[in-house]
Image 1: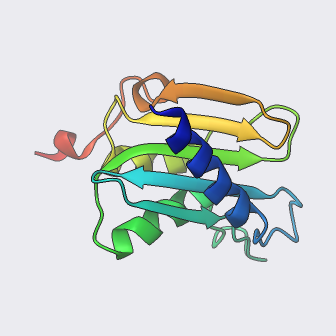
Image 2: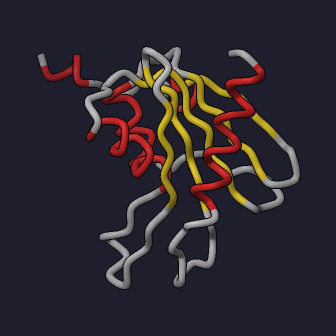
Length: 134
């Protein structure tokens, strides 16, 4: 993936990170996605006192894209302020599989400049996909 695009994703994720609503965990997360065709979207984590109604930054960014008609995920970048960048949770990985493929790029980053790269296939080996339902 082009370094300029990764930098743009990190910039968008950082802007979303600033809007994180995380009064319970105090862990801010921002994410940005690039969809097929090059459209970019971002989202932050939004917590809720019931915990179960919390939405992770990754799903928030993807749902922003889907709400605008974009349904093919090419890459996602997840940004935290933690010492080690966080990988996406299992629920987010499953949602990414709905719109991505095993080749989809997943970047994890932190504010200190650490950047890790995975494929969705690496994060979700032997995964359940929409194709399993046919």
